[in-house]
Image (tube, rainbow, N blue to C red; front, side, top):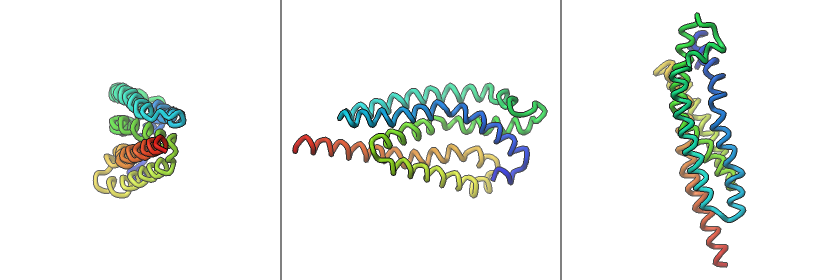
Length: 191
């Protein structure tokens, strides 16, 4: 879908993606910490700590999301100059738009990563994998449908849509998994 919008759009999205790989690192790290954290607390029988840790990780992620969003709004165009010439004004504008729209959804990415890895650490890795499939479906819809109707905005919304799809799946899964673990813990105490 991006290629079909022309070389200038491709250049802008490519530069934006490079910057976003860097700005997305805190969310990847928060997520990756949750798998061993939840697994260790599950093993210790401290299920309440899993929820507390998830809440704390999300608060940290939401704060980081806000800081990165503001930074990209203010300095995103300047950052694109690391990857393209200042004379490519239209490509810089496309890159900036992509970064601002995508980073506006970083709170959703926080939830995707923290909840997915928490579920994985609790031993329900199939749900974590399905969430990735949900993201792929959303990105496919954005490329095949949204871009046809709203053009470049569809490209910009692809990440956000993917994170919404994953969160709509993961959050109820987390609740179900936690309920199952608590029920198992209670039944083992009564036996």
